[in-house]
Image (cartoon, rainbow over all chains, first blue to last red):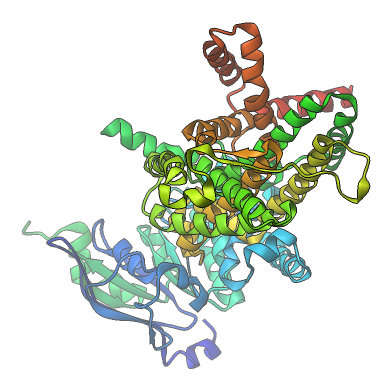
Length: 265
Length: 338
């Protein structure tokens, strides 16, 4: 992180305030709070069932917290429907890749620009002048992103036929197409081999630095989180266990206990 | 239960087509257009009438294709929108003395609104459940048209007879030939607009919803809006087709628009290739001509013969005309290379 980015990071970009989620009688999240500062890569870790994905789905408005609030640039996002989250600058990828399988790579990424563009069905059907110009602008931007993520060779390939690693890159490209301020990555290293994880870590850092982005990384892969995150939040059983720099969290006795079990068990 | 659930989850995955494959190349389009333009010059009036019917059903199949192939929603209720369009045009012509051509946009707009509104409750349903809900619409429509309260306008069970228009500007064309070209012009305009739509931001949003609703919503797509819009557009085009049908057949009656019509249109879509817009006309030709062929083979068992022919087609080319087109393209490519 550059000094400039650190300096402006006083107000949190995203603030999670005392968020609780209850499914039936099960408490999936219990009063979790943390801040994300501009330009940060925040790693969210925890064993299976710790509530990471639940929190993630609260951020993208798939779940409604039963208590607490989530603030983006000081404004609550909880009144917005899921489809109006992209426009305030929150973009995401999915744990098991949720692309549009029957569409080409380029169309998938074009759809990523939806929240940043306008049209209506009548103008679209008649292909009016402003629609054509809008489409040209979309293509320009998409072409740029495809180049950035090295996807131009497969631009017209239908995504369902691509290798998993490439699909993950397409998903990243689709998220970038919406110009997010915060990128939520749900287990981006899942299903990747050793080398791919290493490349991915580099890529995430590059995106943060070159595209001025803030990243929330939910990840099982400790090596990846510890090597690229500036700040780590550890969850267990829906509660925040520890928070701090990667080395602080790594040496936290509660975190060690959660991952490895305690002696007396 | 498990079998039902499987069908529901599997249903939207019917062979959806990437955008590029939704159209024909420029050369092929020109050949098809030329064929459509010269065909009426060499056949009898009755065959021209049949060709017009093919174009009209082609429009209705295209409308269903936008809904199912484009946005992934099923409908067995297209006959209801078709009936509505037909009656609006017929009533406007016969009771309000309106010009036949002017009634079509009105049918289209009213059917769009009707389809959009029907799409709202349908949002809660998907797959075969949506198919059932639309099925109910198709079953109900003929009875609404027979209602005593509307009889003054609709003619009740008797239906309405519509005057057949002559060719305008003293053109030396028979009524059938004129209506053929009139229908062709409208069909081409709607076909081009449909392709524009599916290739646009709105069309991509619909296809995104078809492929993955949660991801579509995360991209900022208002899933409810685009699903209902797809219903509206589909109903609107079907309404125009219905209006054209009323003008060409010169008659509307409740029992012309039963669930059988909806199933025929569904069949036309499958035979033409789901999601492949040019296939719509092939599917329409199938549902217009194949029953006649079946009847010429055996009068008493025409239904059975039709069933066998349909079975053969689905067995040989499950992806319909689109599959045939792809095979042809492959062969032509081979010929060019050798």
